[in-house]
Amino acid sequence: MSRVGDDPGGWEARTHRRFTEPVPVTVQLAVVFPDRAASVRTFQGVPLRVRSLGIDLSGTVPGSLRGWHRMASGSWWGLCDFTVRSRNGRLRLDLHQLVPAAALSPRHTGPDQ
Figure 1 (cartoon, helix red, strand yellow):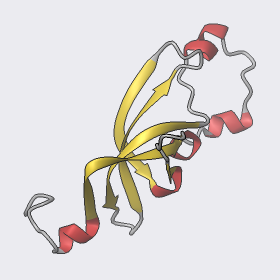
Figure 2 (tube, helix red, strand yellow):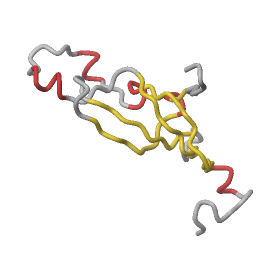
Figure 3 (cartoon, helix red, strand yellow):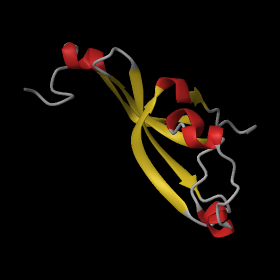
Figure 4 (cartoon, one colour):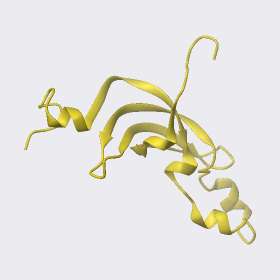
């Protein structure tokens, strides 16, 4: 079996697309990390230190798209680098992972941004 990139124009080229330069994107965290418990539960009973220091997986964050990979189901997922933070912003976790295409949108980084 060949490695990704050893098959230019062949089967692997149609299921894996890597970029030479990362592409700026916006990552919708709720799509990447659906928190089913949050939809049926409030923060009632959760200690304040957990609420403030726990990772906030809501909203959007900037990211870098490294390439596209097609899943066996036929869907496309992006290989991305992005950072999530604690709710109070003091702690951070840098991630490098596959993200469903529905969670990504282009991010413009021009001089007027």
